[in-house]
Length: 180
Image (cartoon, rainbow, N blue to C red; front, top):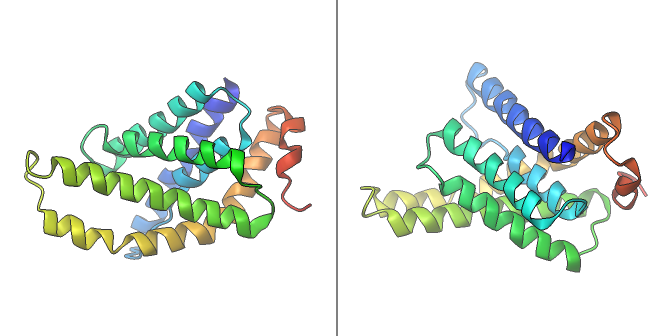
């Protein structure tokens, strides 16, 4: 349970720091999705039950719904779908090294963005959202994925170190060491 709280707090604080810095520095580039990296870490660590991991992902998504002003539940659903896909993938993919972690983060943010796009396309008419705008926004997925992929290694390392500092079952981190 402590690990779940750490995931939620770390994701929320990192998201606030990234968006705050971007606002203070007047950045207009696509920002990375720290939450996608946190969810990927949680899914691949597999140290907690599926339901708890799914709850963590959906809470992180709901917090992003609130922060971004998205329709309630859209990002929560997208993050939940992402966790389930990554959890299934974690059984089949061996996650070793920086490159694989970056690729998994890239995949994670693409799943979140596509799920978000799909949900918004489904409710576009009832929410008076222009479908053309959603279609054009889909082109930005590549930049969102690239930005996330670039910050994945240090973010993943930070999550590992936070778990070690808080003594959250260090022995379980053994199969996911930063450098083998």
